[in-house]
Length: 192
Image (cartoon, rainbow, N blue to C red):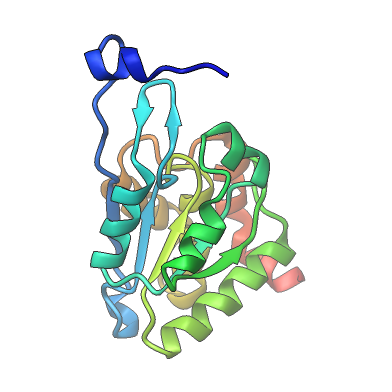
């Protein structure tokens, strides 16, 4: 077994732990402005990203998050060194709603409909939701755009992307597939 504790103690080539960036989606048009948050993967440790799972989970609890919508696969949880994330959430009393789909892709409409129904129900119960993928930029922002468009008919797809880029940064909505899905969401919803 590889033991890296010696180099970690010395601080050689080990980046310092980072704080989980959590941003609140503005849902004030529904009367619940701080009920859906977006973040990257709590506890993620991969290349330049170094998080401590317990510190991230403490922050999530301090924010009053009651439910999490997890969009990463179990394989990604292993890859990014948080294989027990779902059980860690549950151990802290945070309800898990797992709707995985592959990085860089768009979700199926079945997944979107499940997430929309879950968020609708949770918002009606005044619960606080954390929506996350790996980086909090691709899948989470696609799903956030769908939530925004579903609950606000006046919001255009481009406006939802603009809002998410203002919130999460210019890299929000990462692929052409994701962008096109957001543009086509309402048509896909009508056809579903």
